[in-house]
Length: 343
Ligand code: NAD
Image 1: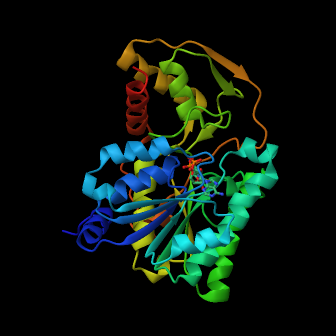
Image 2 (image 1 turned 30 degrees about the vertical axis):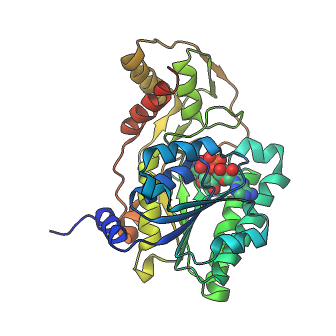
C-alpha cells in the first residue's frame, strides 16, 4: 500500500531535517507553520517585523514544543522591505515559506502605500534574496483575492478576473514576479492561493480581523456580531492544518511539473456567513450554554468578493494535497482555543 503523500513527506523530514525560513513567523499562519516544523525537529529561522504579528504567538509555540525543539528556532526581528535583512535571513536556508505581508482588503483600501511596501517591495526583496542564496525551494502565500471580479465557481487557477482591491493587486503581482523569476533566472517557486484560512492564534482584536476569530471571540464574550450584507456571502473556509500540509508538500516536492505553479488551497466547500453564524452558535452553546442572539445585518463591505469556492483538483493531483479537516472540525477546535483563553 502506498503511504499518503503528507505522511511520507513528514517522515522524510524527520529522517533528514532541513533548515527553513518562515517570514511572518509571529503571525497566525507563520506561527502555526513554526509549531509543526519544530515538532518535526526542523531548524527554523523566523523573520517578522511584529507589525500585525505578536511575540505572544511565539511564546505559545514555545510552550507546545520540547526544549530541544525550541532551541532549533532563531528569531530575527526585521522588515522584508529591507533587502539586506532579507539577505541575512536567507543565508544557508534550504526551504523558504514566505508568509509576511499586510493582510486585509479594507486595510489596503485605507492605506495602499503601506500594503504595497510589504506585499510588493518586500516580496521582491525576499524573492531576490532567496534566489541569490540559491535556496532549494521557495513557497509563498498567494491569495484567493486574485480571482477578483470573475464570477465563475468553483475557482480554477487559470481563470482569474480583475482585482477588486489594492491588496488583491499586490497578491497578484507576487504571482507575476514569481513567474518572471523562473523565466529570467530559472528560479523555481510555488504560490499557494489560500482561501480564508482560520485556526488558533488568528487575531480577533483588530479592526481588520477575519470573520471567524472576530465572531468566536464576540460569542465567547457574548458581544454584538455584525454581518456585512445579507449573510449569503460565502467562502471556502480552510482550517490551518490543511494550509500547513500544503506548505510542507509544496516545499518538499520532487516533482518537476509541480514547480512554478499556483495552487488553490482550501477544502472545496462553500459556507455562507449565515451558515457560519449558525454553526458557531451551535458549537459555542454546546461548550458554554451561552445562547448568542446579538446579530445585526449591515451593508456589504467594499472590495469584498460575493462568493468564493475553490476547485482543489490541481493541488490534489500535483502535490498530493488532501485536506484533513472540514470547516466544522476546524471551527470546534478554534472555539475551544478561544474559550480556554477567556476563562
Ligand atoms: P498575519 O497578519 O497574522 O501574519 C503576517 C505576518 O507578517 C505578521 O506576523 C506580520 O507582523 C508580518 N509582517 C507583515 N509585514 C511585514 C514586513 N514588512 N516585514 C516583516 N514581517 C512582516 O496574517 P496571516 O493570516 O498569518 O497571513 C499570512 C500570509 O497569508 C499573508 O501573506 C497573507 O496575505 C496570506 N493570506 C492569508 C489568508 C488568511 O485567510 N489568513 C488568506 C489569503 C492569503
